[in-house]
Amino acid sequence: MTGRFIVVEGIEGAGKSTCISVIEEVLKEHGIRNIEYTREPGGTAIAEKLRTILLEKGDEKVSDETELLLMYASRVQLVDNRIRPALEKDCYVIGDRHDLSSVAYQGGGRGISLDLIKGLKKMVLGDFKPDLTVLMDVTPEIGLSRVDNRGQGRDRFESEKLEFFTRVRNCYLSEASSDPSIKVIDATQPLEQVKQSVRTVLEDFLCSRG
Ligand SMILES: Nc1ncnc2c1ncn2[C@@H]1O[C@H](COP(=O)(O)OP(=O)(O)OP(=O)(O)O)[C@@H](O)[C@H]1O
Ligand SMILES: [Mg+2]
Image 1 (cartoon, helix red, strand yellow):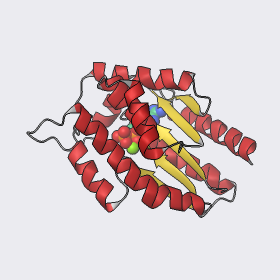
Image 2 (spheres, rainbow, N blue to C red; image 1 turned 135 degrees about the horizontal axis):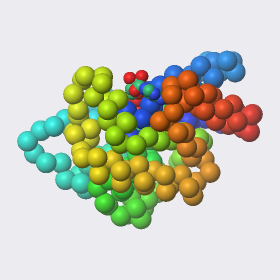
Image 3 (cartoon, helix red, strand yellow; image 1 turned 135 degrees about the vertical axis):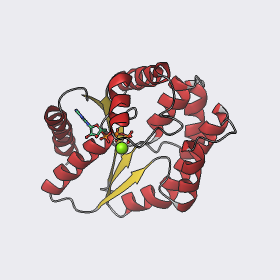
């Protein structure tokens, strides 16, 4: 398999979409044209229905455990139906979020045990993991102010308090500190510097993986 799975992570408004466009640019400069894009939760017909349930603000509270299980249900649909088949066809897959989001949000944010989440992951996805994760790191204040500047309102997650995102961010950083495949970008920098940092991470990755 020569396909690679590159994932972009970070809290809302961190600059994930911005990062993905830089990754796309760098891959194309390297002559890589077979690229698939995914976002989580979602990305297949069933996974998109789960996304709607997960992001909408309805009257019925979504229990933390329900949230965790729906995230994994959505992820398994996406991995089985799109990500693995694309990698088997030697495509590069760029994921807007993946498993680390569950560790950070349902673990760090909601307080579900990380061991439980990692056990569930192992059970439903085995050893499947991204080749590279780019973590866009910002303070929740900056991230949420960028979300609000877009003027599209806030979804169920975006409506959480700052403290929730502080826990999510800290959990992301803690995971990154023990996993060399997660590269942290200081996404509070001005846009041009952020783009350059992403570029450097990608160039290093392509250089090391050939
Ligand atoms: N380093 C930066 N400095 C200033 N503005 C930025 C920076 N990075 C991104 N932005 C702007 O902030 C907004 C959010 O960025 P972007 O959409 O890339 O974040 P995101 O992580 O994909 O958000 P979401 O979680 O909502 O998908 C955009 O309007 C973007 O142009
Ligand atoms: Mg985005």
